[in-house]
Image (cartoon, rainbow, N blue to C red):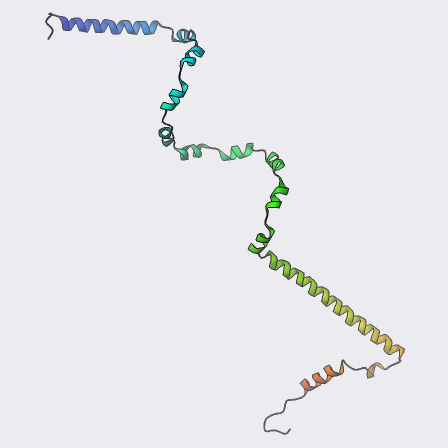
Length: 182
């Protein structure tokens, strides 16, 4: 208790008056007009930006960022739609990319080498077969003309090469049966 009688009531009255006066002053002040009078450039010149940055805990700020939420809000289709693909293609040096391709490694990792070998050998085999067939056709053609010139009868011509004809005759002959006539 205060030694002065009624001091407690007096303090309450002073506090109420001070509160009312402060509210009236705040309501009376035009904050926009007050801010307009402040020279912001001069104020910012006095601010130690490096000191402020040194006091900022960037790791604490970053740890509070929810990257997944940010990524969820990104409209990838809209971003891709704004990309000028033609401009990107124009900037790509295709020749430089081709120079970096290791053809030997590519062939080793794929069956491309086998495919090339098969197709090459297939073409060679087909070409050889064609040459052989043409050779046989030419041989038959020449044999017919020679036989006409020499006036040979076609019934007397052999059915094929003598060694082959005799081998075929041996195959067509019946096999001897065990215990039977020989």
